[in-house]
Image 1 (cartoon, rainbow, N blue to C red):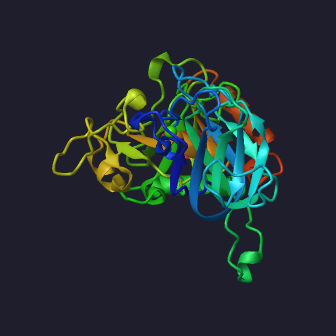
Image 2 (cartoon, protein in one colour):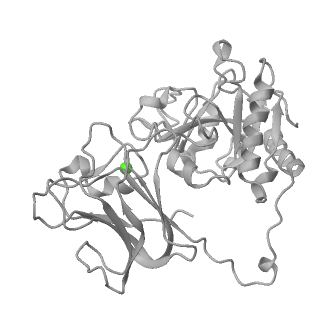
Image 3 (cartoon, protein in one colour):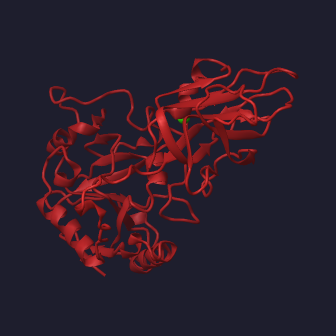
Length: 371
Ligand SMILES: [Ca+2]
């Protein structure tokens, strides 16, 4: 699970646009950058404060911004109870995860670098990335650092010690159809309907269910029987384009638009700068807060699809859980074949895990049929 981060400190930073908080703000499009350090200067470092001692199993590092300077020295990742970068290599309260890294820039098929801390993880309140010494003059540049911890242990009651039974494909299809049939304007996602991301070119080419990290948000639509409209690339869609993913009903949303708002270039993780409210009555020039789902659905035009935004970083780090089903709209040549191909790849990837039950569904506009 993603560990909450309470704050970040850096040895120095080059200005307010590159503050250390930019490396923990949930978007890969903002970065933290140290001030220039000359030859012989202390090495640069970035420390994340997790607030409490946490068992860290993995740290994922995004480096993305084509104009920016590359890191000028290899970087080590440490977990423990000390803040800052001045601890000694043999300090018993700090433990290094992985090796020394020359973090490379995020690419569509390799959005981040994984730093592993072993199967059991490493306990610590602080995660520090620091340059190796000795070093030459240069910068330290990172875009986002995500800390993964072991999931909290289950409560120790007799009933919770039984392993969770994974749902069968038929049961998942039934759950999706129940939510579609009963969906209505409501603030809880599971009460409002079914969340669907239609493939729109933002996916990784090598792994179609992984986002490419070219954007910090992913677009989806919340549909139900009352309003089943979906983004589908319309008539110019190539064969097989009308394929999508049904997202888990616990997926957190960033913000909401009552119509397609072309958010790709919008600031503030796609949410823009104007927040909707009921008295303004606007439907397209503003975004609704995620906890105003009911209001957004109430103003959504009956003939249009809505646009709901999800964090790319959340998506990356909750695979395969975020994927409840694959789906397709069977009205274009090759769509069923393309969907089957993606679904087969996914099931092979997650064989012998609960995710191997993720079904493929045909969406008719009225229901999801198990294929
Ligand atoms: Ca960032």
